[in-house]
Length: 271
Image 1 (cartoon, rainbow, N blue to C red):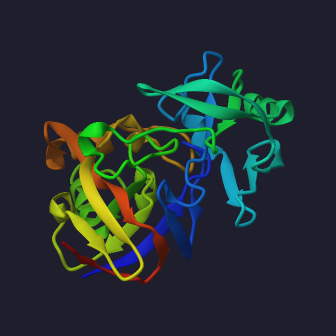
Image 2 (tube, one colour):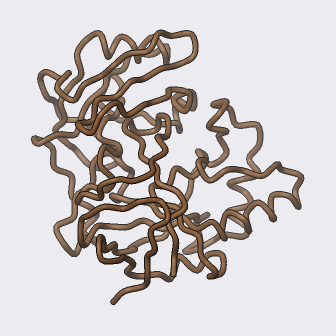
């Protein structure tokens, strides 16, 4: 049996985390998760890989309709509503091209000032369509602006193991938020066992765990400072959490049955 110990969404891709007590799981993952994304002048997505200071942009969910407030160091906060968009354009995220709605000029100017680059904010909406990789798509699954899948699940036992390994190289422990999960579970099962889980759920939801999540240099970025002071986290993952020749932490999921999820919920292995 698994217990839900953490729920998180990221309304703007690669920006701040929102902690939740409960959430709706939609076909695109947690409601409001990664429905917004920053793009550069060429229409290509921005992330902490190029702009680590994006981690310092804090996001607050204002209502159930997806209105958000953003704030950043040395910058006044700004409220953004889902209908604060105008024309749409084709944007690029990894190898995908997606139609997305563009935020208004004042919103784009706010983010450009924070990051000190010309950028725009776009929204995944009714005009958008981005299928999950066909190799893992069994139910016409779609994903918004997450890297590849609607949900990312992580296991507290695996974080405990990682922090024990980091201690051996004199690196301070890291928090789960460094890995940007949507659902965190605790259990009596061993670390890394989540890589073998297939289907989990309860009488509310049902999820298919389709692909262990390979990790990149973002795991080295401290989300509280926006800086990477060491490469030890990714190196340790590559050494002790290696799967298919890649550093791995957590597992990606698609949604079989939508519903509600809350902290403390019990999930079980299902067929």
